[in-house]
Image (tube, rainbow over all chains, first blue to last red):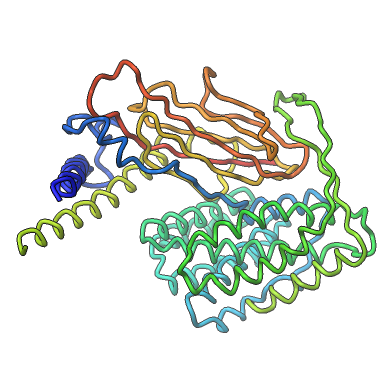
Length: 302
Length: 147
């Protein structure tokens, strides 16, 4: 009992000390050092070690913005018929549906932007703004931010910057509100749509199509995504989409991968080029099966 | 009993407020001190931040696409000292890079094929620090990409 009270006391002292160290407002200019935890708390190292957290494991997923860039570099073309029409926004009534739709539209906007489709970009920003409101994300599409988007929509780099900024703001706000599982649904929507677009830009009978390699590569991020979603154990909203992705994972696991060791090198710009080279092989109808399964899953959520 | 419950509630609220405030501080630190250094790379829309003590470590798996250039940055608050470093390993555990002893807190690279890499962030314990409580501070792992 005494030990428990001691632990609570220690936590309390740390809490109150840290809380009192915080800034009063965002605009206050504070020296970096002043923001940190001080070492004035009288707690022994042994106590600290005793209650220290386990090694921290963080998650990061490839963004739809990266996927779109990679697709374009692989020779993909723009075709709006593979994107989710903005009118579909009205189909979603639940938080789950809206969050996945948000991710899908982020992917569509990323794809439209790399092909400089200004009107499509504006339309997708508009539906994303509506979904952000519905998901109570008040810090994402502020009035000033929307004005900046409207004024710079013709500039691909600016659109990418604003899209990244809105994605970052949404992730940060959801984390701060302890709603990270919603961020997981957005990420899932973005990943599914990216794969769906890729599967429609490929000739399934041409296994030398570079986009087929892009599809095979998604197996790595799929595993990360499933791990991330599975970390929210009790969230029923994530169960269905996690199960859908696990079905897809079974197909991706059948892709044969040959790893070839390549010596690390440096390119002409001084950038390090590292890691093994991977060669993928789809056997039988596997590529078609992945394309078909992706279509089924994606169409459930648009 | 009532006093004990009251104290418990006060402590719970204090811990809750502390957590929110420390997260906000970490976010501000990252936005002010780390994101600007990412240029000319575009942030991938995610910042993984946490508060670490000297002697702590954190890890993360990330997927990197073969057709893009990346800047991987680990930004640690100065209170944690100069010794903070990160290591990047491939799926077979082979170390591809370590920032230990390097002058910059980022690494620019490209991968031969799309793959997951494992990142370990290490905050060494300061052996000269004789205080009872090791310092703690914000650590952010940030990724930027460009064509």
